[in-house]
Image (cartoon, rainbow, N blue to C red; front, side, top):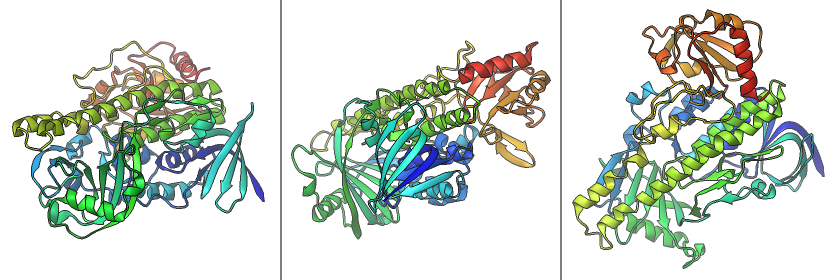
Length: 546
């Protein structure tokens, strides 16, 4: 028995990236089908860091903020990373874990939180299932595809054995690190496939009493008998222990429940509270980025396109940001608002971001070795040297500049020749700016009686023209009925009474800028011009590749 389905976009993979892609396409009016080989969301935790930029995207996509808040860990519990001998042993030092306090609300409406992937997936599934332009088929595995000039014909097999033929114009591969679709497309992943290996031991446990006043989200162990990492997904209920493993010396089967129980007891280092081993899995840390992101009508998104060490929490977040970048471009092509050439900008913009994030993650992973080196093999190294090694890890856990400050250099934008701010440490320091390619600066504004972020005021399916107080000429030009444009005037829709936001944007009172549906600045005119209509028309043509 077989079934045939026709849909504009087929999304392969129902993890966070694939689900976000289906939601964002639907929001843009593009129908999609997401197929996922798993019948249920993940049971065991995987990624646990959702950064500010990803939350901004989910906020714009209408993902339930109350569900996100309820599933996220409080910064009181998950606001530090600790270096210890064992979980109950000596604390060697600690560091703040990312920018999670109210002070970061000046930079983003949605600070980073620890939100475990298996909880996030359930929230995203609920949003996708409520999206009228999206469908989800679980327990369906993508097997193969053939492309022609008009589209892609995919073969998908249901768990029942039924073969589903899906005819789509676009194939979007979000099927994870081992991406079957990437391999079928003949796209190579560049970089080492294994730089370290671990056994993941998922625990049902309440270790709050054990850690007492040393609450945190990560505990790096530095005992000669225990060199792993505890991840507190929920200090009262759910933990993971990452045990270093050498697959060349022992098989994965050696880590059965009894062995893992012994490993965890040694890592606890004291009277062990009751715990239960829920799941055991092995994984390889790698640093790989696909050589290219596109093959005809097929695109790689998320872990199918890049694999990073978890040191920095950038994998899931980079994937959701890939989806945000690609969704509006496919929608503009589907709606006849842009030529297919626009889609070439996806790789041009996102590949450099993945390469930079891969480098940062690998650098963090390598730097972590400084702490056990300072301790020495017996764990009796000079404590002053150990504290210095821990202090040197600070960048690993403070990456706001990398998370919010990434800027596209080329792609669907018009460079204006300006020199954007160059912070002393671009990984840690975020400096808002309105240069083309940058994410629009956030600021709080009163709008319609509510306090909203400037990001909330952007159209999710059109460009937004933002003008200064004296930008009537731009607004008149945009009022000609262009379906690609929405307008936001300072002094009209937003107050900006002290002019601080306009200063961040880098425009004078009669200046303007265009913001893409993915909230990145595409074009800017610092001041007014005589032929505003012609300049706008030319800017849009250049951005969209006409």
